[in-house]
Length: 73
Image (cartoon, rainbow, N blue to C red; front, side, top):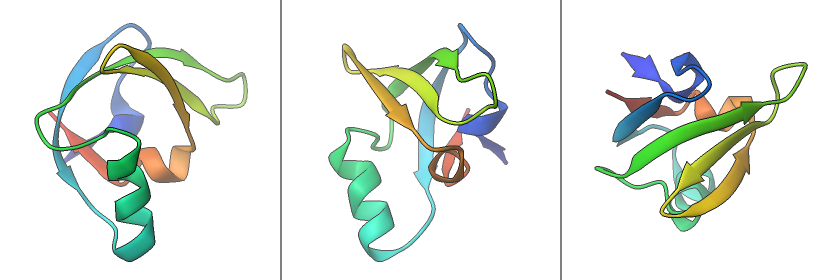
């Protein structure tokens, strides 16, 4: 199981599964991170949190804890 945390800067991946429940999962989906969506890691903050992504043509910053809930391939 590879998560969004495991993707390096400049690499792309496709979302395969969203873990988590309730409001957390809904919030992730509302940000555009749904199954079969291509995601590219643009930057990572100096201490590793947050992570800046490119999703559906826009920049999105998410917490490392949320990135760990997103499985990719």
